Length: 86
Image 1 (cartoon, helix red, strand yellow):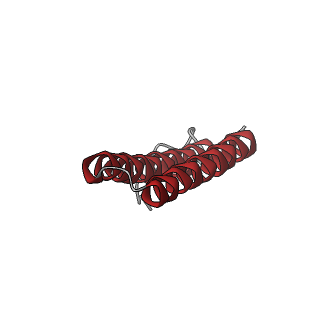
Image 2 (spheres, rainbow, N blue to C red):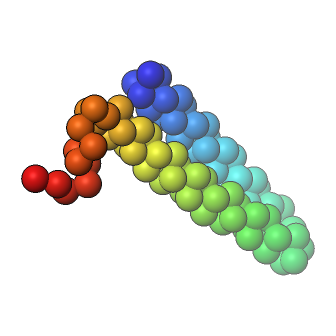
Image 3 (cartoon, rainbow, N blue to C red):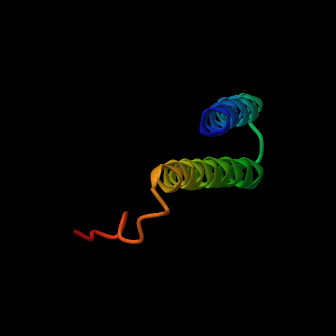
C-alpha cells in the first residue's frame, strides 16, 4: 500500500512541476506582451502561492506516508514497543 501511495505522491509532484512550468511560461508570455504590471504581479503571486502550497502538501504527505510505514512495522502485541521502553 505504501508503495502505491508513494507512486501517487510522485505523480502529484510531476503534475505540480508541470503546472508550475505552465505558470512560468505564462509569466514570460505576459512580460513579452508588455502586460500591465498589476496583472503580471497578480500572476506571479499566484504562481508563488501554488508553488508554496504544493511544497507544503508534498512534505506533509510524505511525512504521513513515513508515519504509516513506521506504525505498520510496530508489534502491537508489545505495549512498550515504539515508546522507548526496555
